[in-house]
Length: 110
Image (tube, rainbow, N blue to C red; front, side):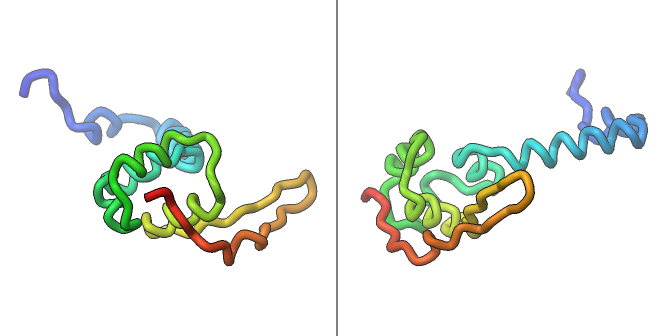
């Protein structure tokens, strides 16, 4: 394996400050993900997610490429990946969790 090095070997000589900067950037990037990136980061395939949602795999592809979807659909997808969806309105002086959407019936295109 000439030319190949372990990532840990490449970063072992980084200063503590540089490692902290990298960790902070990584955390920021993890906070801002598209639905497909989130699924991939969780190591869930479209087929696995489709099976959990009891829909066909192409429907997952369509969901991931939408720029607009029902909150109920998004909640169902997030829950199938093992998460919980919370909607928060952020104002300069306060953050408010919106609860109107918590009991919506979920109906993903099949």
